[in-house]
Image (tube, rainbow, N blue to C red; front, side, top):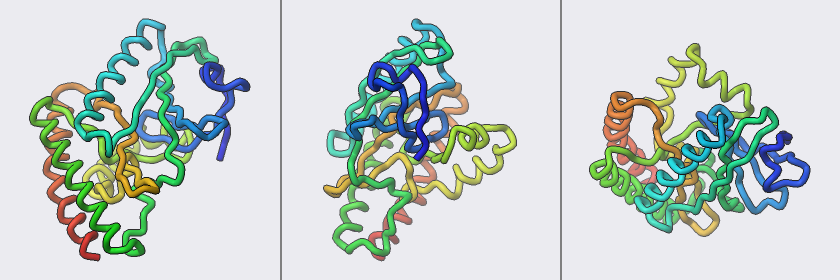
Length: 231
């Protein structure tokens, strides 16, 4: 794994250097040197201290809402720090417990799992879908249960470029089903846990289309979950 050095990590790391675990649409994900915590950074959102405080409050409110939506079994706590980076921009760091031994659903070999384990995963996923839909009906929003992964800063930026739009659409509509989620982790004690609590930041119309499509795709996911459970 690559290590990255930036003074934004100063509040939690003496040498300002952390191991990069991965990344998604907007987020770079690191691990603390003692291995106890995950540190998330949205470097593209850096700005003034006032901007960072506003962003941190919005992120915390969303995380608290999504955690209540899914319940304590399927969620983890998130804590927020504001620190200056090496470019003198205020950044928000999200600190979460590192789930030792947990794997993203995208990394699971379902065929190799015992029937009882597949059944447990299926029950949990259906409950997560139901809770997300109820939350959407109440609030007009829902947690991102899918997510994307990137191997480097450069790949994340490339994936978010206009040239990669057809690939993103294909991934959104076809490839990213719930069983291949990067935002849902399967823990050693058999829980399916959401680790990403970001909101969709685009405007009202985009959000409406996005969540409507996700609502439709949940029906596909129900079928895939059923097939996975049967083996």
